[in-house]
Image 1 (cartoon, rainbow, N blue to C red):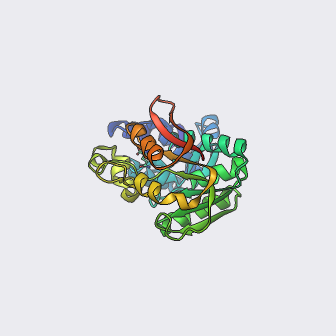
Image 2 (image 1 turned 180 degrees about the horizontal axis):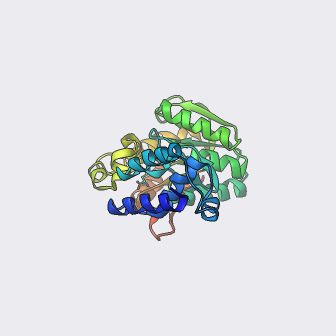
Image 3 (image 1 turned 90 degrees about the horizontal axis):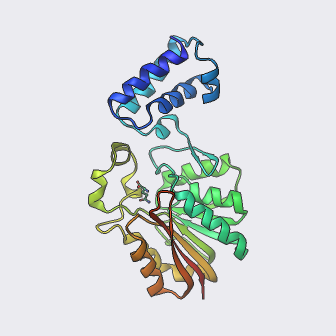
Length: 279
Ligand code: GLN
């Protein structure tokens, strides 16, 4: 069988089970097995694949048919132009989170911040990309040992030095920071079962579940963080599309920031809240 034949075959299988990007995902699987990028696949559509390669491709395609996320199947995900390793122990980095990272980099540079804390780092996508593009010293914490392992791998892969601490929120954290960043679990418990199969059946629930109203981690972080944030420092949260007002109020009611702002993602939905410069 040729490259283009196998891509067409699995891509039409994917369509049947409503995979969102059937062609792209087929190319990613075939490319992963043949160690070819998409451009190469398109350049050599007539190349024959071996039986061994075909078997590996079909094994991965079967997983995608069951709606396992493509990123877990190929163990790879792009975020902020960087390459990340992912597995089922962490959420898959989302494009939406780039809004938080870009804002963080802007503020770190303008305020000349020196150190930062990423709470619930997961794959490390926030800590690694912020460290990479701003040169700030990041500390990254997570309650999951397996997530920390993934994040460490990503720091190595992207050649940044990060301090990792296994910690339930601030439990094992010492010192103060110029900036605190967090994309905590924020989905309302009852909503999780309504999400796409890729999310509800495969991504770690502990990384998604923000309790009954989705806000428990914001409350807990806000309640405890004053000990850990320097004067003049800032805090940036990723939030769900319907949480802007509540999370902004949490910051306004508990701190005296120069300003509290809600930022939107590319779809025009509230996605980030920043408490800018603690007075
Ligand atoms: N943005 C993710 C989703 O919609 C959730 C991320 C989170 O809970 N922190 O699936």
